[in-house]
Amino acid sequence: MVSKWAKRFIQMAELVGSWSKDPSTQVGAVITKNNRIVSVGFNGYPHGISDSAEIDERETKYLKTLHAEENAILFAKRDLDGCEIWVTHFPCPNCAAKIIQTGISVVHCPQQTEDFLSRWGEKISLSQDMFEQAGVHVDWLPLEQLD
Image 1 (cartoon, rainbow, N blue to C red):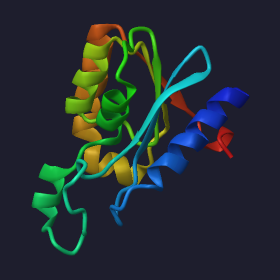
Image 2: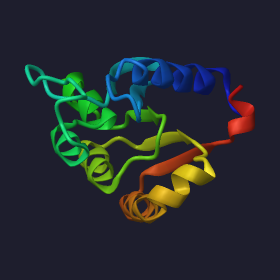
Image 3: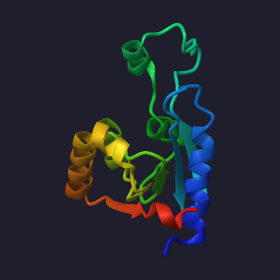
């Protein structure tokens, strides 16, 4: 059974993700400790960089974009050891490395759709292996319990 707090934090991650100007992928992350919000982040360009989607080709856009997890970690500006992160999409290996390095102990993520898994399954497997080796617990939240 998914707790009321889990539902709230995933809903908050979804809300924060909606702030992204990326028309195709909106990702949100919420970092918590003891059910208190420490930081939030969404995918987007760094401060001061024009984020007009029409300007950049897909590859250029991806090179400039900070992921939601990265933004949440950077905005926290504090020690994250023992914190938890709630994400709308499972972290890529680069974000997994940053999550591990900061000492975040738990990653909460809704079960991913078949479409998402078909495109990102290899990277998800690598991230999962990294989390397992580092002792970071992954909490897959059943989609049917998040409504």
